[in-house]
Image 1 (cartoon, rainbow, N blue to C red):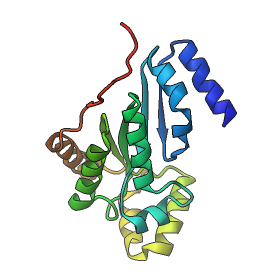
Image 2 (tube, rainbow, N blue to C red):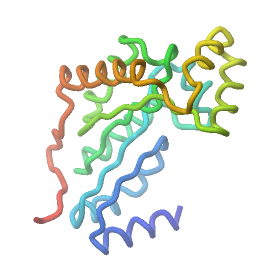
Image 3 (cartoon, rainbow, N blue to C red):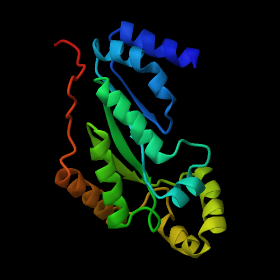
Length: 189
């Protein structure tokens, strides 16, 4: 923890822009350091929130903070003036890509004050692929043949991924996800 805090302090003192992507909530301990850095350089924090479904979260992200806790942490950062948004990643075909599930995450991001929102679908590179497919076979065995078909290569075919990304983009526009910080911390020009 001290090393991370020191790194943030050094980046802020050097006026070096940085961004952080996290599934954790402990970052709120460093709000003061993030505020100081954001007053000197561009700082952005993205909270990974691919789903709000408790079963999918528990089985695919064991040991991580629950998604709603991440959104509460996001709210604290935004209220402190820090640019903080949501990264819906990885979206899992057949598990977390249903229109209602995607809309639920986008609405929750808006309610939490997210300054932005982006998404990406699952990539299965060697190592991750074996681990993920093993977990899929254990928890959702009926999806295994579909994933083996979809992921012959590490990346999902664009014909599969682009409609998901387009759906999220439409939801982001519909819910007007934008920087609405009351007191934004931004570096001087």
